[in-house]
Amino acid sequence: MYVQTYMFVVTRSSDGESIMANATLMIRIDENLKREASEVADYYGLDLSSVTRAFYKQMVNTHRIPLAFAPEEPNAESLDAIREGDAFLASGKKGRFDNGADLIAAAIS
Picture 1 (cartoon, one colour):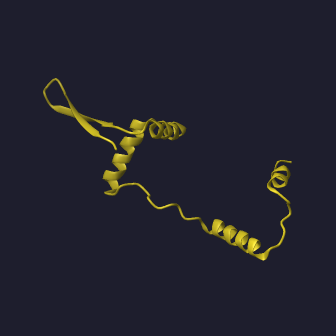
Picture 2: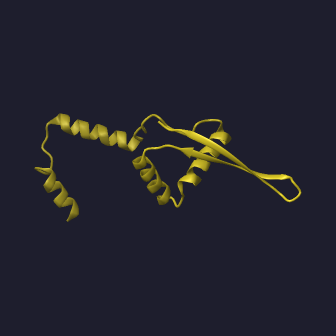
């Protein structure tokens, strides 16, 4: 569950004209989710505020919510590899390695 609180701040120039309006958004979020999201944002050189602003701008620009709720589908190369692996397993043939440890040892040597 999260709670949103909006606070609007309007800055006025010396002649009384409104020059900028800012809103503060406060969200309750799980601490671990926030930490993990912050790590992802940091990886891209961003902070969570910048990511949130970008999310809102994208939503306004596209008139859509920029989220994908479906899992990513494998590409053609991955589908071919999956079919190849399934066919190999179905054939009953023995692989080149007797166990996972042998496979890893061969891969790192």
